[in-house]
Image (cartoon, rainbow over all chains, first blue to last red):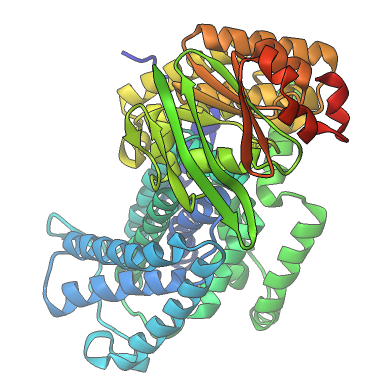
Length: 330
Length: 257
């Protein structure tokens, strides 16, 4: 048997996450806070896929909100309209987004250059129109309402705390698998192709195959997040899955930094919380919050610019420097 | 026995014929060199042999299989590894990780097994790390395992690339100008490393400008000039070949011949 080596870099963030997951609903009965943090968890799931795609495999997708949307509408439709169990809805969302991701990535990643970014941009716009126009399936611009809460073995998870636990449980599993992945042969191949494509070819790495697989995983994670979101919130509409959201997801990945999961996850937590700052900052005045929400885009923009200027390597770079300091001190 | 057979390979870029009807054999267990003035088509030839470029005409047979048109990763898996004239290291990875990446083609952990950290993947990973450490020591980089490739002194970067290529478990190693930019001591160390690699049963095809190194290590030499093969034979004969001397006339390397 191989010695199961316990890697401190894996254990510490996971332990912190576990404390967070199990702690918050016990410490606070604030439904608003729980809802905001649940939404943060949904974004963390998508950003984990973006971190693999952008930070490790070096590919840019401008259409991940579309996969998020496909996941949400798929699960909403099969559960609400067809009466499937919730888990089957989640599975359908994952399968459909994986297949969609494969069909989109295969032709565009065979070509050299930024075809994937272009293809995903176009795909996102097509899906935005589909979400609005396919009224029979999506409810059109008015949205899709009355989506039931997640339920497992016949028990509906309908409390804010229950939803919170569910989402962050999934987040923990997704992050644990991803952390394993990036420290494996596959993660090394991803970093290699990011470092030098010629070098990666000389190592016998199938560049196209690897990029396509990572893209499919990132699409599936967005689909999973969509399926979770739809049932936790109960209502979805096209604006939740617009180009704006795709760009925000890229911003999280960029702000988070490359070759890191923790950086993009922190970025997702930070950027998702900004418009709901009153949930985490007690006593924040109503007018201050309105100002933040009104200037949300600018706050995003300025945050990213500030990080790019003052924190080289993004949040991941900052984390690396902190852990290097910690090692020297220890 | 002939491990690699190159037959009438021609590669054109627009109006320029970079490799022109070149044929030669590489015998198992040998160190063979390809030399020639700048622009003779040596690196293009390497690119053809590793499917980085596709030839316009001709065939390349490796271990009795016609490998033209195979994707590069299949070439690597079949047992041909290469280094680059301009080193293509993974700068932000450690020397050890660079070599471990070279083992990609001969290891198995995939997305699912790696995400689940199945026990056999942990074992495989440990074996790969041990083998990578051995290869670093083989090329004399044992002390640099944890350094980032970007931090390696220039003279050692080519050795790291050779170690990475060896991690693919090749039967044929293509080395592109390994001595470029090396001082005398480093070149001697490189020659030793090449002998050690050959003694492990790896056949070597080397493109090189450094005549001292070529004449010392190679069993046989192919001389290219403007894409065409102008001579082939053991170092002693090549040194006296009038066509070779003529091709190098005016080149700085002529003194070394």
